[in-house]
Structures are given as structure tokens and as C-alpha cells.
Image 1: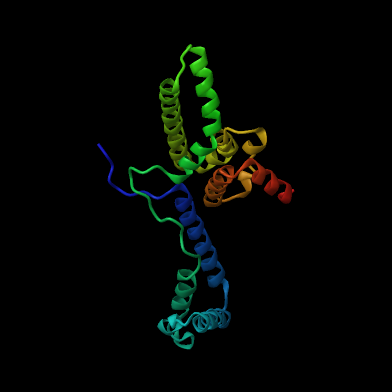
Image 2: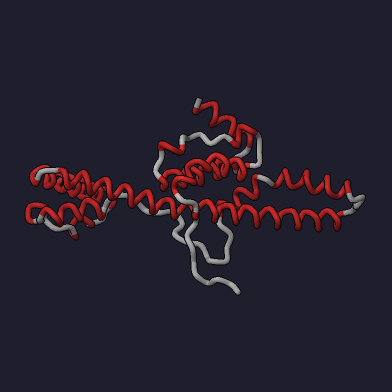
Length: 220
């Protein structure tokens, strides 16, 4: 039975957690301001919007209330409500493959080719049909494993996610030791940022080896 409910990608889920954390931080900062400081912050926000309108030929600032007449609660709500940005790919069809899984699958294609060739040789098989059959079996098994691992990553409790982050990246990488190294300290990141970093690292693995080496050297 197919599930028809759309679902978000791991990267998008992580984005929304990060946005919630960011808005909570903005709310805490705004609540700590005096009324005058808060009103100045709102005037500055509206001034930036007016400048943006003039640059883009829009008039979004006209829909905001006059900061001089706003209550403290309304000013905080305005600043918090407009914090953050626009999320990438909001959702994918329920029966579609998560792009992160597909990215990881592509990274491991060369490894599949080697495994398929070894299996064919070990069984004494030959010919294009045999190669195609075993390649399809290997890819489907790998895709199933990666899909399950990605879903399990999202379901992990926060503490377990932190200590398993490097192991998860290593399993998804399937490449050299350098590719498997997670370039972050999971214990210094929020859950949302950690999930997003895992997603970014998987996407980085889809780059060519030359580009990965280039970016690693640049970072060092």
C-alpha cells in the first residue's frame, strides 16, 4: 500500500528546526530590550524594507504598521515573524526517494561496479545480462539500506544523534577515509544544525574527488 502523504526532505526538516531556534533567539533578544531600544529595532527593520522596496520596485513596507503606534508585544511579534528565510524544497512526494539518499547512492556507484564485477567473476557468470541483473540487485539493496539509514538518522534522540553523527556520515560516504571524516564537532552544534551539517556533508560527497580535495585544502 502506497503512502500518499507528502514528506519533507531531511535537509528541509533540519532547516525548519534551525529556523525555530533562530526565531527563539530573536525573541529572547527582543524581550531583553527596553521599549525604546525595541522601537528603534523595528524602525531599522522597516527602513531596510523600504530600501529593499525601492531597489526592487515593490511596496511591502506599506503593509507593516507604523512602529510609533505599535505595542511592545506587536513589535516583538513583527521581528520574530520576519526572522529567518525561505526554506528550500518544502516537500517531496511520499513515494519519491529523498534527494539525500539519491546523492549518497550516486557516490557509491563506483563501489557497486567493483562489487558487481567481483560477484560475477566469483560465480563464473559472464555477459551483459548477468552484469545488469547483479548490478540491479546490488543497487536496490544499497538504496534500501541508505533510505533506512537516512530515516533512522532523523528519528534518533538528540544525545544519540550527537555521538553517532560521525558513524552515520562514514556509512553514507562509502569512500576514502578522508571522505568519511565529519568536519564538525557534534557536541558544539544544535540538533537542527547537526542534521543540516550531515545533509551538507552528504551533498559534498557527490562532488568529484578533485573538487572535494580542492575544498578540503582550501578549508585547511
